[in-house]
Image 1 (cartoon, rainbow, N blue to C red):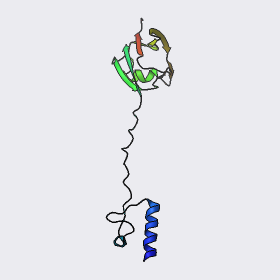
Image 2 (cartoon, rainbow, N blue to C red; image 1 turned 180 degrees about the vertical axis):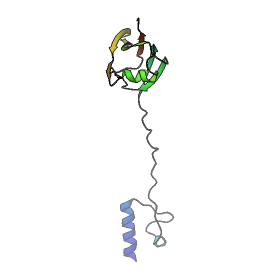
Image 3 (spheres, rainbow, N blue to C red; image 1 turned 30 degrees about the vertical axis):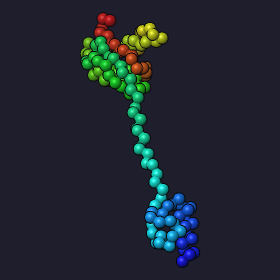
Image 4 (spheres, rainbow, N blue to C red; image 1 turned 180 degrees about the horizontal axis):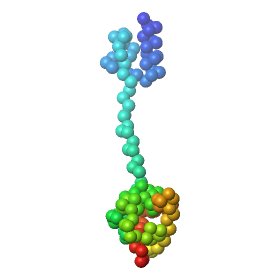
Length: 137
């Protein structure tokens, strides 16, 4: 009986348990359960939100406006967000206005077409303004 009690105390010591009502050495604790020390439960980590950029699309597109796109989006994603080109727009070159060192820079981006769909690898940054032009621009 003493051997069982010593073994129980030793196992409890190794696992970090504490007695619930009486001392672990007390004969009244034989056969009782022991609780592990309380541990603080950490709330689940917040899932990181995907980063986004705001891009303004205007000119000869179907729906001009400011669009929130995933960071790393290219110029075709901005066109898709705006519903694509209007029928009478010039669909080969787009103008991007980007602030660089506090000054607006105009960048002309040529689209390449693959199987009838525009393909543009030009990556947009937050705050870029994309303009499609009409045929006479």
